[in-house]
Length: 459
Image (cartoon, rainbow, N blue to C red; front, side):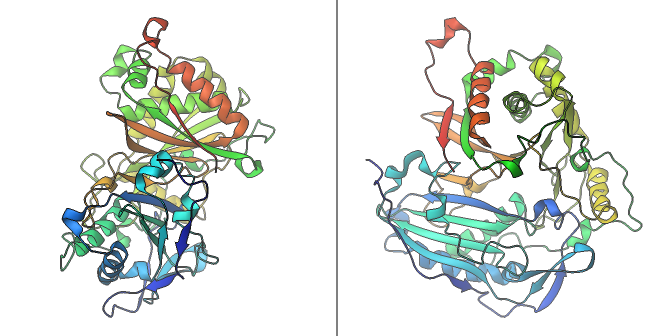
């Protein structure tokens, strides 16, 4: 079925969803990891569900999710508040119960007709997540916008936009899981939320004990032509990494790296090299890639309560001059990526918190020679069940300037990883060429695999 030439989405006026019961009226401080300048933006997520009459006959997803949201906010009541900025740019949450922004909508289209249009970078995002005037700020604005759009097939799309200072992907998943449990009839979340942002406050006295290349000033040898702030012709495309692409990349890696090389590491090294080549960066220019590393779990020795829903990650950066990155085999970039990730531990995270206080909460560099990657393939968004079963797709809706999110994707019957990328139109063409070159099978194998690695969308 073809997608209609003009998609008709009817939206009701937005409403504020408040907690279903009275909640504490208080002020809560964010941690130094939460309120850093680099997280003061809103991140869009999209979740798409098929109709499921056997599970939810005659139930309206808008009504179910609206009520579940209100009940979940009793436990996650800071999300119904508003951010205020205090001295030294410190952010606090005014837990005033004003509510989150909620929009009911309907669209004259089926999920089947939408096809790949729901995948990042979603070209219809503005239809499924309308940017209401005055809702997109950080200070004094709703901390969450949710739009539920019912489709003619009986399925629906839940799209949301979250103020990143409040939660990371793991924290958002806790909240979404609580909503889903309420929607399916639970009286309380199975994991109760924990605020306790003081666990990641700066130490007293603060002290920077690690190297943090992600916040370093870089000597710029470029003419500024690739700086994101100078680009008005930015496009987004997604690139697919399946078994064939990974097999070809692994053949380029020296034996001593193969056994400890993850799929994420290898894709990141590949993207970093191809992107640097595509941007035609001065050979002397320092280029960086940061990997977002979650502090939760046993690997990094950061002890946080199970229900902690604040930001708990760092993004240690790998650094190289452009020339050796571009000229050396892929193993060079891979080794740098692995070494950067290995620096992440509790001391590194606490050093970041202290750096925020001592250096005035600096922003990471926004020049085009910087790339940030986030692995969302195991984030768990695909497990969120509001009563209609698991979503056909769930995850970040697009790349965000310098940030690319890795998401799971099934290409026909093959499981792979989809990575949206944001570049200028000319650099994007070069990036695609470099990526196709580096993932090209030997000529004798080409006839066995005619898949395209690209899914494109103009933003």
